[in-house]
Amino acid sequence: MGSNGAAPVAIVGVGETRYTKWGGITDKSQFELACEAILNALADAGLSPKDVDGFASYSNDANEANLMQVALGIPLMRYTGMVWGGGGGGSCGAVSLGVSAIRSGQARTVVAYRGLAQGQTRRFGKANAARVHNNFTMPFGLLAPPQMLALIVQRHMHLYGTTSEHLAEVAISTRLNANRNPRAVMHDRLLTIEDYFASRMISDPLRLYDCCLESDGACAVVLTSGDHARDLRKQPVTVLAAGQGSGPGWGSGPLGSHNMPNEDYATTNSVALAKELFEHAGVTPADIDVAQIYDHFSGMVIIALEDYGFCPRGSGGDFVADGNIRWEGGSLPINTAGGNHSEAYIHGFNHIAEGVRQLRGESTSQVADAKLCLVTGGLGVAPTTGLILGKA
Image (tube, rainbow, N blue to C red; front, side):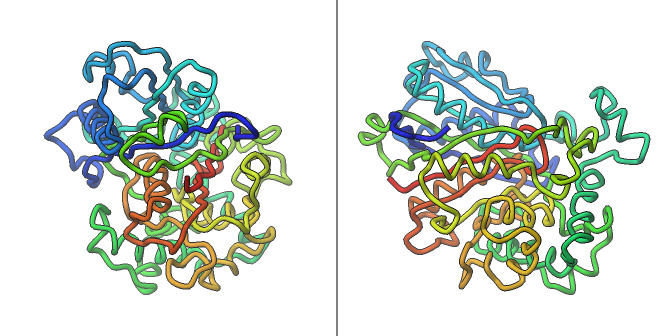
């Protein structure tokens, strides 16, 4: 998972396409978008497709590596990998696969990527009877992720007194960050507390602005060994820890069966993973300067702050209410590009890109002297994944 004396691996390039609302990109295919993001990431690193020998992705990515090899003119592909599960649970896991491949000598330069053009293919999160575990949820009206995850948020509110005002703080602070980011889909759309409470209820307690966007676009990062990274164009960002996993008895969790142990129900399935990430990176939550926390639903962000040790269990609502996640004045600014809520929903991979930008000093909501960034994959799913990135 982490370094622990192993050879360092660094992210040396970041590439993105334009981001639009779901169905907004019609002039390029989903595959073309993924290729564009990869080429942009390689250009950012000062590399070419001839330098790449590995690919990693997640969430049943349809942009297949073998076809990518031919399209990009990559001479020899030595490694491919994909993380199990749907949605954004595997976003950081794709980076973890690349790190493992490089450390083990299976590849020298790995591109991790995700591309979406749902208007051309299918809409993620739509009710799907093909998954066996959905037999335990669909008969009870749990047809889409907002309904499935709302139950966890509702339990947290019941146990700890978390309020809709707390959820609103996540949505509004994230939107403010997007308003500073010209790449963000919601760049020019302000969000007030009045707007938040006037929005329709999607699945109690989740209102419209508690839910992430649905977007088209693609994003990629380039990974290589620390020794190689020093010779490249941009300042490398070291992967201090990368991992994936799931707590005991979780199964497919809220997305399939809601069979999680009662004591873990009102969590994001990240407690064990968080402990390992910090141990392997050799840092503590107090050392983290900025975080990119997967924000499919605002209530899950609050719970993740607890699971990752930034505040005690049950106090996540108060933590955000005190302004701690705000870019200006907060002890832990989060989702500084606007996140899934307001930048774009590329299954969370844009969170990784923003983590790299923060440590390069390139963010539109730059945290002063940021040296350590936590990035999480999708929350409340299995497997869930995470990264701790460090300024080289």
